[in-house]
Figure (cartoon, rainbow, N blue to C red):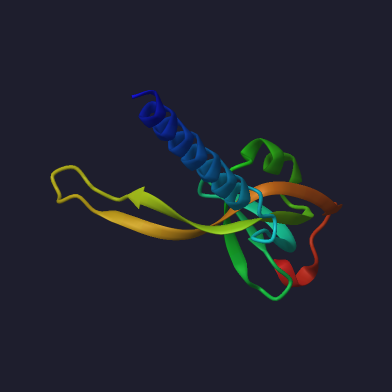
Length: 119
């Protein structure tokens, strides 16, 4: 009985240790991060970054860090994500829309004004 219990404990502890190792590897990847540079704007309750080439990205999170940089050129680090938005109107069938967003992890000030191409 004692040997069986000890064997079960060893297997349990080993599997928990392996799960912890996997979680640590997945959470620690910084190679998934992307850096974008452009003009930061705010309209219709959304922050957007427009790169010099005209590509625009809707930003998600870090509103407290983004507010002070609106109208400035910034460098933003984060990763692409998808946000699910409910678009159901009263009395209508339920509907959900997915939007491509860029989930911000950090923002860095580049210049107080944006380049002309970003407007």
